[in-house]
Image (cartoon, rainbow, N blue to C red; front, side, top):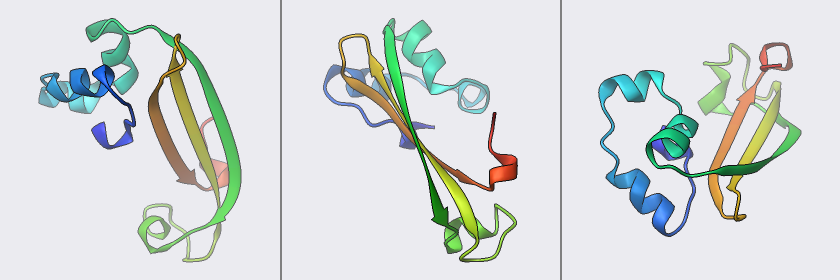
Length: 99
């Protein structure tokens, strides 16, 4: 979960000092921690979607051959003051991407 976070300054220090229990790591999203536990106010999110090809790292978990077409979804979430707080990448088959 923490590898999806790309933040600067105080936000990253708070996240890194947060005590992550096993239950939180399995059942709690980063957004929950940012809002409820750290008291941050989220602003807007930006989304970018593009076509890409499956590499060795994602081909097997995606149940496709290397080189198969996939969608790449990039999400950038900012705080209300405009600071970026979460950057995530998701690659998957078009028929299995979340709606």
